[in-house]
Length: 180
Image (cartoon, rainbow, N blue to C red; front, side):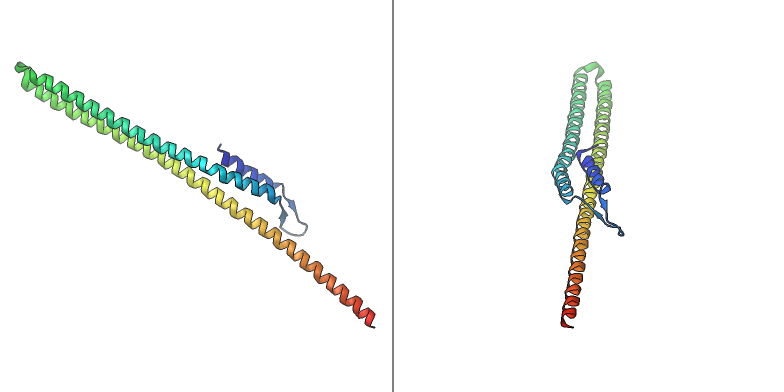
């Protein structure tokens, strides 16, 4: 479980622990806790990005190693072929074996490269998917948090407006009573 996942669970806990407002579907949340968790998520997101970059670097290293191995196999095959050609009595046999060794070395080298590329693509795909999921979760939680804060502010303003309206009505009533 990543740090971001833990922080997202913390955010869910804050929302689950929110106090419900009577006769509404609204809840009161600890805005400072939510802001702190969102900031921690932002700070951890670069860590997840670094992990994805490390995976990509690992892919490149695998490809380089496979290329080096393929070249070494081909060079070894060429060296063996040259040795065989140098022997006069088995020149034709040596040329045929050298061709087979070169073909086999190329085939093995290409297979190693294909395997390394497939593995690196898989690793990169997984890292990209994880990064996209993390980013989507962070963005959703950010939107949800902003919506909760906006709802809280709107509810508070409505209560203040109602209180002011009632106070104004009381003042008008008192004024009318005094005028009579």
